Amino acid sequence: MKKNIFATILLFLTTLQVFGQKNADFPSVEKFYDSLIENLKYYPDVLQDSCIATITLMKIHYDDNGELRSIDFSDSTHPAFITYIQEFRNKLNFKSIYQDLKQKGYANNTVLIPIQIDIEKVDGCKSTLSSTDLMKLYFFNGKTCAGEYFLYPYVYVRIVEGKEHEEHF
Image (cartoon, rainbow, N blue to C red; front, side, top):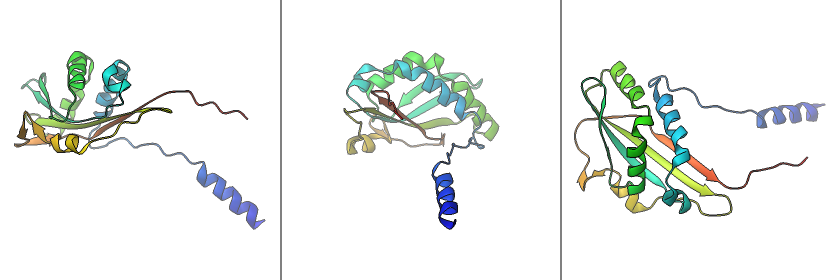
């Protein structure tokens, strides 16, 4: 009987699922994340086909009315990713970031958003980060990132491409 109870508890514990919690400090982060994910279906082929990882600090500047003024990227960013973001910038929800900043009292600050996108192909390549990418992460136009910035929550995306998994019972 004890073995059955132990087996039942063990089975219960191994089948629990955990879901991420909402970020109470930044309630609008999900809106930006969702808009980014929605547009990843257009992710550059040169990055996806070669499994090139993206790691960057995206620097965002707003005007006094909360309109997006400019976007800059750290030196670690692949040029294809910069082109991709600039092409889809009007489809990304940057207003949600401004809402969070305004709520926190940082509406006039420049925002840094750490972004990492990893690519993996089933039975194929898997993206990796180089030490050069990491060293260039805190440089903008060859100069060390300096000044007063607001660091927004980290965005991590993993794209897995390949065969569908089928289970046969």
